[in-house]
Length: 144
Image (tube, rainbow, N blue to C red):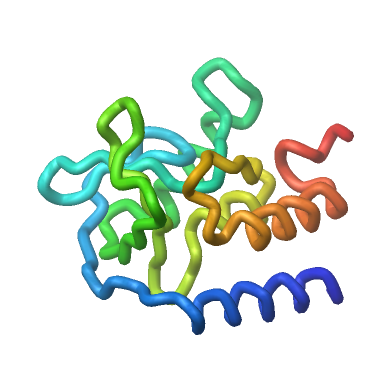
């Protein structure tokens, strides 16, 4: 409980200190637990997290959770340092009605926090959320 409060306060402080774009786009497809397609056919890879790949444990659960969170809804995208990855996907933090989607998937144990330099603006927060998921044995950490 205390860890969650600390991570929430930390996240809110980070958000208050950052300039966030107000552009919102509708999600038209969900590729997997950490990748979506938005209107215009743009493929967006969530920054700072790594969800299971096909043939890995909890892949379908992560994909379904992501789909339930964002499919058909308007999301706000926030860029860090890099615009795209080596596959041409936009790299973004994704928000839905005040929910930090990247963190919600980590909190549920359906993705782990993973730094991809230089895009690490919220990495400390994502790692704190992962620690909480590990301690409560959610998702990927339920068998540990």
